[in-house]
Image 1 (cartoon, helix red, strand yellow):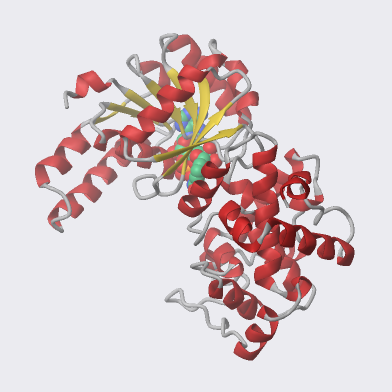
Image 2 (tube, helix red, strand yellow):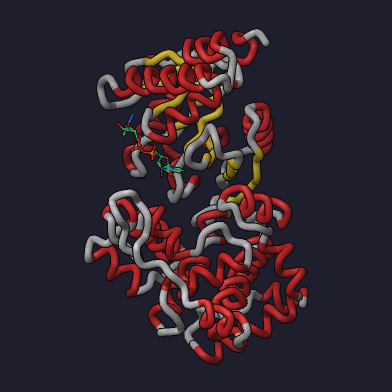
Length: 391
Ligand SMILES: NC(=O)c1ccc[n+]([C@@H]2O[C@H](COP(=O)([O-])OP(=O)(O)OC[C@H]3O[C@@H](n4cnc5c(N)ncnc54)[C@H](O)[C@@H]3O)[C@@H](O)[C@H]2O)c1
């Protein structure tokens, strides 16, 4: 394909996400212009991408000429104002509303009116960022997952002002890059970071309640097909990172008890027990990264899996995942197919929560939530009104 025909792609922020997104767009054939506020960062990112691609070529995973051609399509530029006219500019700078607003104001002035302006924000509202640009109708979220070259999912987020042709063009573009696009409204946490909250929260609560030790709770969830248990997964993500996402969703939903952070996780973060990166989180890690204290009590796993919903880590977690997913769909924020795709591709769940709910039976899920609500009043376990209707 003629590269010039594909149009230039601008990427601002050459950190973990920006450099990955630049690589994805360059691999699809676009000329890519990459910039970063930190002097030399875009050049270093380009060199790193070139070295990674050369390594993959040496391993026989792609032709050497292709590796060189992809890297050559990425041009570091000094500032956003130096970008040529682009079909899309994607920003992946610091997660800071003021910084993003200033950048969109600048891009609104310096890019043609037809350019799509996208943010890779994980937690900020598109509705808060878009007004800074001269054409808020052309602003949307393109939420890639880490690392962008390997992760197939992109959440395409519509703000209140985003027009349909921008959503359609951006969706077509990321699909042409080999990604799977799901659509979502600009709602706190979008799909993945929203629906996944109870996966972590219920396990943390069950540790707090003394239902079982972390290793036993993780083993229960693995037995249901999850690749990792929630507690070991938060150690991998970083307890601080996971707590920050949860707290952001909680604050943006007027502190809905469904998303309330747990004293258990807050305690870990306060103690500096951030997970694998600090050698101590829920578990303790040896120098080679293996946990030294993650042995489950198998008899207890069997006992919990046969127990009622209040002390059954799988039933309780699934009930909450299904409730969250159904609620998102019911509010018109995402389609059920998109929610299931997002959760299987974005988090690697063995099944989408809507399909899982259908399998369990929505009435059963609702009854389980009512039982949980009776055991733990306060609103966290209230069934979504949609669950009442479809069960
Ligand atoms: N890391 C993830 O897993 C992940 C996943 C999805 C989305 N995101 C989002 O992507 C964005 C970037 O995250 P990251 O993990 O790549 O961060 P990062 O810290 O690795 O990279 C950010 C880069 O942006 C540069 N930068 C900061 N302010 C700038 C500005 N005003 N102009 C130009 N460059 C600037 C920094 O120098 C840095 O190189 C954030 O909005 C984050 O929420 C992150």
